[in-house]
Length: 320
Image 1 (cartoon, rainbow, N blue to C red):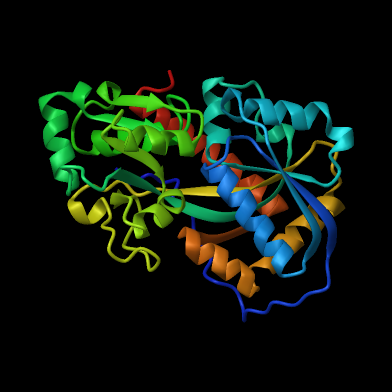
Image 2: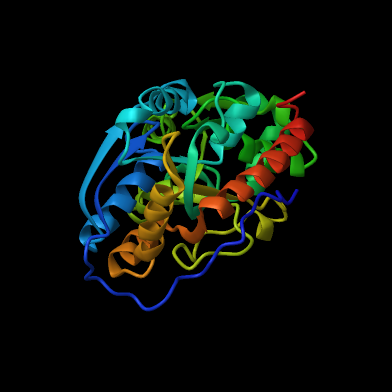
């Protein structure tokens, strides 16, 4: 199954440069999950590039996990008057969790500033795992689905769950029989994999890349259309005969009540970030693909994805 959510990703923009006059005095990044997850890495990597390039003078971070990201969303809405310089990172799960009722809010309750990157899904195993090919996972799943457990850094029915479920469905198997073990953040899910609690981990390529390069884990497959330059030795599901292709966007939202002028100011500084050497260092380290959709374009993209994700989740049995 080719997931039609795969984004149209912009390539690297313009000639890199590193010295800038600060465009914004300060940005406070609100992160809806714990340390070590994709949201955490995206916010901290973005902050690193903005600070090192001189585009923003002061950067700060706040992790506020809980409720599948809903705690941070509620906090941003309830304290909007005190969040003038706050950007909350989020991704495709804000669509999924709104549809499933994990929290009552949606992206419409926030001010979309910009989508910034895409990250492919990765299916990961321990370095000593007996699995070396996706077909071996499928073989064992056919024998006994209960023994092939997938870890993920988010709740059941989330993106980490949706990707392996789609891959299993593509093999002609029942995705509702997939054993998914939910952890509160990507770091905890990785620990669950390494401790042997699960056989596989469903995560983002960016979250797995450094540990893979260090030889601590192996990335069994990714959900890209073709192999990516930052991980040339990692095969795609597609080349192994499974047509599951998916790219997860990540981006930033401001508090409700933020003016269009303010939102555009933040969108501009994020757009200018792509032209810096500092950003290319962060991007390549994490295996991200550049994706820039500012303000109105971002809102329109979210509307389309909500329809696409909803249709897919109904097909997989996660929504009625």
